[in-house]
Length: 151
Image 1 (cartoon, rainbow, N blue to C red):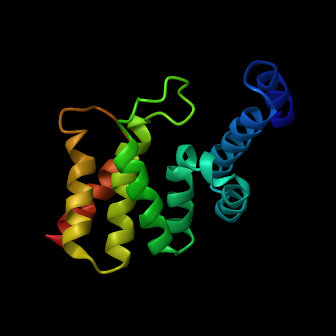
Image 2: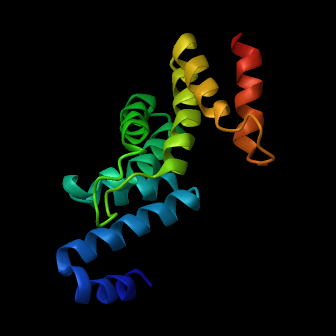
């Protein structure tokens, strides 16, 4: 499927960019499938100039595999660039959901690291997006429970 995707995109954006798109989609598929080690392998094969779009997936994979420092680095990048819509092609543009979820996983990573204040801030930042929401994301309940533990 990813080969067919790359071939379809290549006609419009060129082989290099099509390869980046397919590699990024593969990374997301592995992350959503909770295949953390495979996701990290896919992440490391993406050229540096194409890694920004998958920073959330890589950050979560690092946190899930216990490498909180690398996870924090990628999740902070995601949080900083979540609202950057300056790239007209949309390839490296913002991703509001990834930026929001990055706050939750930053909270988890900071908590693992024993950085209580940073964890509280990240969890609260995440929960601010869901104050009047009926969303049923498991991360909402987890963040609330974490705040009760930490406060």
